[in-house]
Length: 231
Image (cartoon, rainbow, N blue to C red; front, side, top):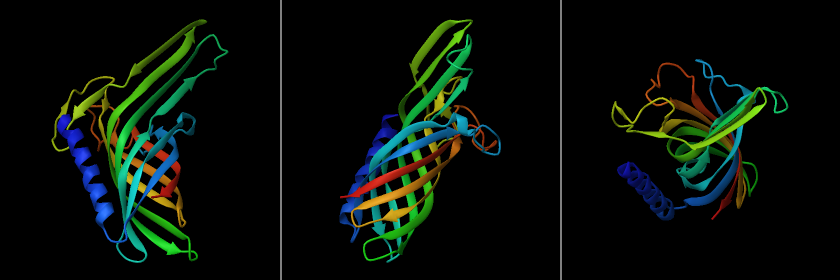
């Protein structure tokens, strides 16, 4: 586990050096609002009623390759998860639960930029991401025949190694620590502020010990809007 944290730290170090030394490269502080969800069917579809509000914040670097094409990467602290509810709080029986894991995420996007005027550009792009779970909570509350109950516990993670076929610490109720998937992004870049809409399509199942390639059920889906401030 320590080696994995060191590896992410090294990635951040190399990223910072890369963006600070590359010609014409830039960096921005980005923060945004996440609408997190988890797929519920084998085709990857979601239930909008299970969408969980969350957030992300981090540093993104931009390396121009040509006048209209660049590579963007960085590190984000991002909240994901889902919620569910049966019945209403006024009923004698109801149940409400939230799973809200937090990840350190490394996106890498190829981005095309089209000038709108002297100070702004429209951009769109896509690429992969990798993420490591570092914390979060499972919360549940409800009533059974009018008797209320409530529980809150830290998320339990497996220590799976993405470079091997095995998964350490897998078990019932334990989440897979490593997530990966695909990103899509589009937005407007100004002289000092960047507005973007982003979508994360997870390819790793949340439950530990499961086969990622079996189907597209139980995988992260994240829609977010963000503001970036150039440094």
